[in-house]
Image 1 (tube, rainbow, N blue to C red):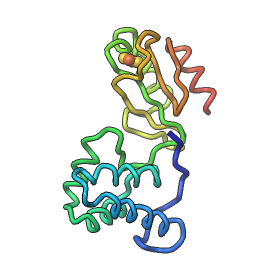
Image 2: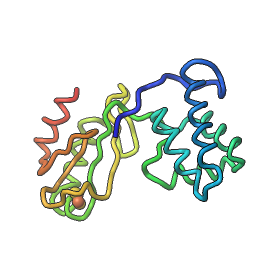
Image 3: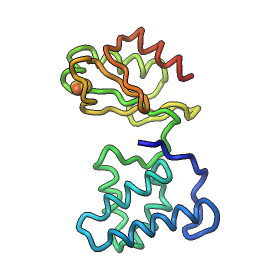
Image 4: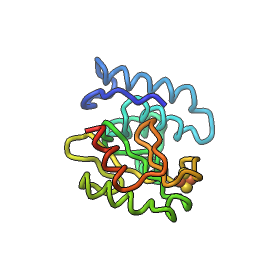
Length: 170
Ligand code: FES
């Protein structure tokens, strides 16, 4: 999946410039899907794809335009792990915590990342470089433990190897 480009602060729904274009595209997505059951999820996905996360003004705008409560939107955005309401770092580290990775040392790899970057899952480093998230399975269990950073998949990772990998992004 192509990483969304950073767009800066989102301010005025329907405003001009980049923010205005984003709101227009979200509105188009709402218009396309509003008759469908479960339309909220694809609209939120589209919004997150455009902005990189789901900021408050966007959520309020979607709630108003789709005639749903803000609490319902928050409920969905919080329930699904692929939604985020905080900006993500330049590189998203996806730590596999599926069974195969976990039993083959995934927790040690997670600890290494936490220690090296000083963040916990769901957080972003202060410099905005890395975000850390946990996933269930990256689909290459035979080569566990596995870590993904953006589109790069790292297999049979060890704590030392993880440190080296992080160093290549710094
Ligand atoms: S459990 Fe980690 S890749 Fe499947």
